[in-house]
Length: 387
Ligand code: PMP
Ligand code: GLN
Image (tube, rainbow, N blue to C red; front, side, top):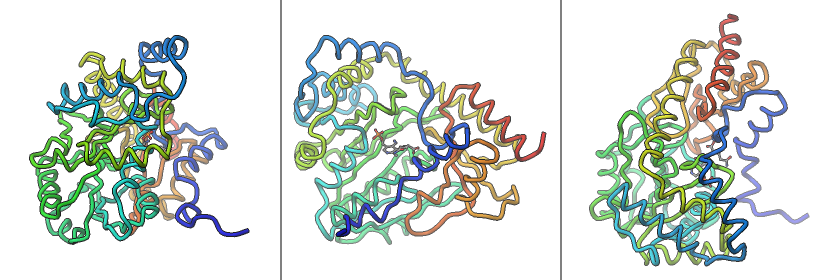
């Protein structure tokens, strides 16, 4: 057989799928792949049912239902004071995954350099390579996941086309500070570059922090593509409804890529997400508060089991440093053993590093019911302490 496209065939199956399958085989509680175990907001589900039954189920506009594009524009105004023209500056995609692919394929030309921070979400690298881009990494390390001017200066060059920023950052649970965003903005402007902002966890920011979209930063309004996901904002990860906001000249080439990737997204789900984005502020604050309480519940349990827990400022995730446990293998072996023997699945953080390996850190997902978190903690305590 002639060989398949190497960019993808060299990747292997994603770490999320690998550990979700292992969790099923082992009868483990899956705190690996990031997905909530509740049903999602009942009124959003009801709107999806209504729209499926009563509205058109044919191809909507490739840019998305007007109702959802308007809702995304209003959401930007309400939460970030961002003035958006829904007709020319918003596009609906099949999840943030497709939005990322459309942004990267639409903008990158072969030989363009792309600055990105590792740990990085697994879909970034192959899509950048597919587009002919050359990744330039800024490596972040625990416990603070910080970076400085020298780190950015080493990654930027006259060939830098764009920067990809995931804020809040999966898996590090880092929320970029205003100083860090300002530094990124300075380099972007100095290099006449663009920013693709993966902000799927924009409403999952804890302890009174505020999410600052880079698109609102002075000078960056026309240089940023802001990506959101209904999967995270409404705890409906299987829906795969995403949205991109950006200046018309930037969005247009992205729309050209999108028209040949998926073209459209199921219209009833778009209607339901439009409904959801218009919900009261209390929905959004309640989502973050509920998730913060789950973070604290799991963090306390992991500490009781003898793990060292790093701070989590946002997202669905907590990272534990496993080095104090005395386990001698790497983080992949640790997660395998945890899944099979303790029957709790987690994700090895090394999977998010493309250049410089990181060992000893594993990622737990806390967006689960209290009963599930408690049972996972009981299993971990038994596993590590024999109690
Ligand atoms: N970016 C990040 C950082 C993520 O964690 C996820 C999680 N699924 C995605 C993008 C993809 O989002 P979606 O499910 O909307 O495609
Ligand atoms: N974003 C999810 C996570 O980080 C996984 C999404 C996927 O499985 N592709 O766990």
